[in-house]
Length: 386
Image (cartoon, rainbow, N blue to C red; front, side, top):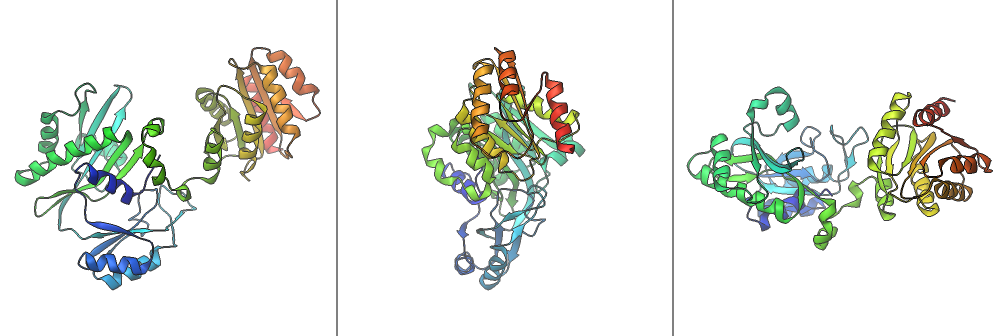
């Protein structure tokens, strides 16, 4: 689950992480008042779930309260396009108005889970304000890493090591160590999956602050944080993904033309790869889970067919937990209740797979049956080009 920058900073403040003074504005008048309260010199920042806002015109410096209002008026309602939004961009509905800072230098700081080591890793770099992927590709030696033993957490010497590595001295050093410890506590306590501060800034007065903050939560731990539900902004999420979540379906929209309905994330990934190999592109990732009842399949069909780019559908189900003939009956029942106007290829493998194929072939609905994984992918790719 993603949240906005202003929400991330409110969360971080609760754990003692230093952030600039600022407030959210949804109108130009609100922006003017906030800017006046902050002394006039402010930064107006578009609030969308995407990076690269500055390059797209979503971060602007205002030298007065009136200028802040003028910028906010133009920014609120605009469609902001960045390298992370895609060509369609995202509508800006609110802005964060923050105090201007006397910045001395910018750095990078982040915490993520390194699954290969089953440990959190603190990453820091003197190259702030730049995508960390670019730093990793071009100057990997500039990325400092500290792996954290989950049994003991971030140790004091590790925080000091990061501070030394970033070249912090005097008050900067003390403030930096305090910042790192607070960020770690926020990450663990809030069950985050990622915390990124880019840039982390050092002011000429020796303060260390999060000029920007990106926080993602681990969805599997949200049951421990019922208050986080109010932080979710459905306007920032893909509408079909929101709809799928209502039925406990794992759905991610992609840019292709073949709608996929699969049970199991691993099989779903393999299915998308096979569609690519066959010469087409997947339109989505859709994992219907271990069971595939008629109701589940019907909901899956509705989600997939809501995407106007879908020209064919591939159902690829492994009958382990549920028998293939029951899945076939569910597919036939669901399809008979709907107006499906694109070709549907079905490949069922596992318990009672032959019985399932016979049911599909003898049904009144024109399914194409894929006898093998490769056969199914070839048939659905061919149906797209027809």
